[in-house]
Amino acid sequence: MGRSPCCSKVGLNRGAWTAAEDKTLSDYIKLHGEGRWRNLPKRAGELSQTFVCLKRCGKSCRLRWLNYLRPDIKRGNISLDEEELIIRLHKLLGNRWSLIAGRLPGRTDNEIKNYWNTTLGKRVNDRKNLTSTCKQSNHPTKKDQKKTEPHHKNESNAVVRTKARRCSRGYFNPQQHKTEPIERIPRPGTVLTEDSSISNPVELNDPLSFMMDANMGQFCLTEILMNFEFSDIFDTNNKSDLSPSSKVPIFFPDETLEKWTEGDYVQPNMGCDHHLFASITDSEGDWLAE
DNA sequence: AAGAGTTTCAACCGCCTGTAG
DNA sequence: GCTACAGGCGGTTGAAACTCT
Image 1 (tube, rainbow, N blue to C red):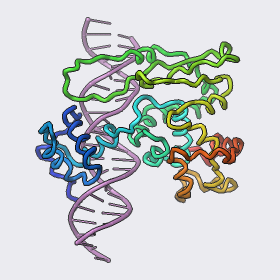
Image 2 (image 1 turned 90 degrees about the vertical axis):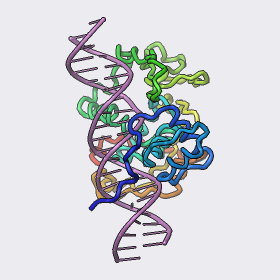
Image 3 (image 1 turned 135 degrees about the horizontal axis):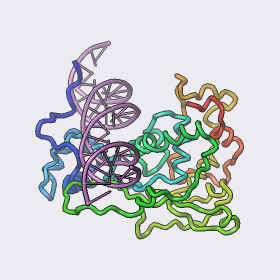
């Protein structure tokens, strides 16, 4: 005897959301806030100025809001910094997508999960198998080039297809940029808006410098990676306890987690132990291997 | 140009946990 | 302690977009 379904599925819409449904939902949440998802569709329909009844399951509403409609969602492709952080966090946390997403402001667990399953997971496996190719050519592929050009579909389609368009994979010539800072080329999929500015020229010949200066907008992930005291989290002398396969849960002190999620967590005079960080996150040791 | 094959990702599903009564 | 409910999470699915031949 299983649990009763979260709602009667009879007469409910399924599949892609329409623009009208999105508007009804976001209007309602902006006015009344999140929560009480089960009754939300009914109440939203009653209060909707567009008189669009939300024939959706409460869970579906929640998912739509959290994964797409929320105003603080960051659209566009995962940046290099974010990729690195996801990989490192995945090593530490495993498939705890919501925890990982919590460390990446604007990113949803669903997005990170999808990105891992379709891209990063494969890449990480490839790296393991062929470490020498990790410095693979950054020259744009045909595939990537195609992605730079938005594919315009019939706008009259009422269903909102919410796919971020991708940009070409950027590349740089190490010789060319040894001394001259260059403007960063957006990572594939970075959504270019009118105010999009990748303003910080970066010295790309130095990976650390690249990481240090990569501008993330709200804050710099690199600073998390560089300033974060991993020694606060665990005893580095006992790495075996951190194996993802270990049954021992990883406990992050509240203070630590707050630092990660707060916008102003970066402490200017916080210790910056690159070597410790590198030893932890870049270790090829078994304790991090999957 | 067209069809087949592949990739991407929004949405769904079912299970789990926390909580109120 | 038990039950039902609400919300959250991770795995999976399937349609659309994209690439290849």
